[in-house]
Image (cartoon, rainbow, N blue to C red):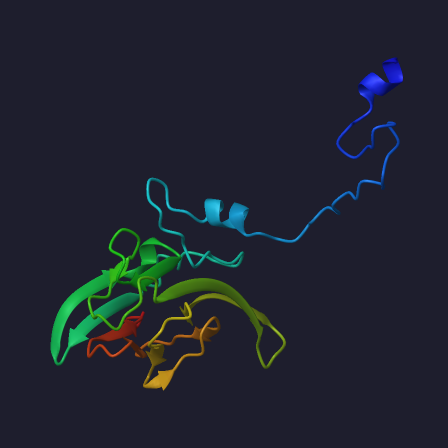
Amino acid sequence: SQDAAYRSTDNADSSGALDKPIEKQAPNYAQTGLLAKETNTVAGTSIVLKYHEPPDARKPPAKDAWRLYVFKASDVLATHELSGRSCWLFGRESLIADVLLEHPSASKQHAALQFRHTVRVSEFGDRVQKVRPYLIDLESSNGSFLNGERVEGGRYVEVRTGDVLKFGDSTREYVVMLPPP
């Protein structure tokens, strides 16, 4: 009959009656991370970025000429003008790192120096808005150090002028400076 032609025979006996009801699998709405991985992948490579800028990310104003000096012992190896962008990625991965770390103890994506817009209330109740640099360690294996103190992974720490950054076991020192006005 027409009814038998449309009935599934996978779960039926010879008379056409069903043995037991078919159990449907419940939908799984858990996050797999595949969409984030695809979004965070650098175009043309298989590199997945560990860090994304927060909503309060800002380029430092042109009047604030922040600089990063790279020292090895007492020699200045390089100077980076930091006013051109809001985020600087430190790491060994030459395709994506803004500041290349050459020491083997450094991670491929080690840390980021992020400029963020902050609002603070002064002692007189005035709102003071400023763009300040912050260091965040990207859960690196050998750590990031600010003035000799290890920075906790995944947390922003404010960086002030004259602060010294070190990454992993490298002897290179990275000094962040804001020249006086």
